[in-house]
Image (cartoon, rainbow, N blue to C red; front, side):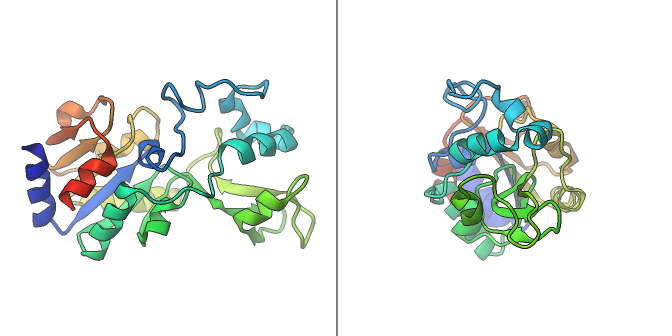
Length: 240
């Protein structure tokens, strides 16, 4: 049984790294982007495509409309950690998991208790003034009746998330590459591995225990020691 084999691999390792995508959060009722029920496929009252509305250009040129879309589609404050988040946090507490690398911006890993979380795309819970760089929490964005202006200098407050046309934080990428390059077991879950540059991170893994958990097949399945086309929460909760 592959589940038993995965359990044995995890039991024997103290150097595991996890890399997760939107599929980790869909089990907390946060929609993904590219599935049939994702943000890019569902009808919207907005006249622009989501990819454009989540771009740096759109934020700068249509800030009010950006926030209308962002606040109604990207913030899920009621979401709670699911089985996958809790299992990964437990692995870290046991000293087995060295890092969680995530494409998600919902901070559910942190809420579950994970400490070493590398957020490739930032977090909706962090926001900063583009003028004086003062930081604000999520409620400051939600409670803004018009645009969220800085209460110190009057500048526009921007979510600390990576929009289209923006580069990933180099320090975060460097840390992710370090952990991936040096880990014994590399578990990838909830991602189709189609979006670059994040998807290219798998190429930095040097070991022979690549584990893939995703509801649909990926281009890397044949390279994996074990591949599960299943719920990531269900798989991880069975072995941890």
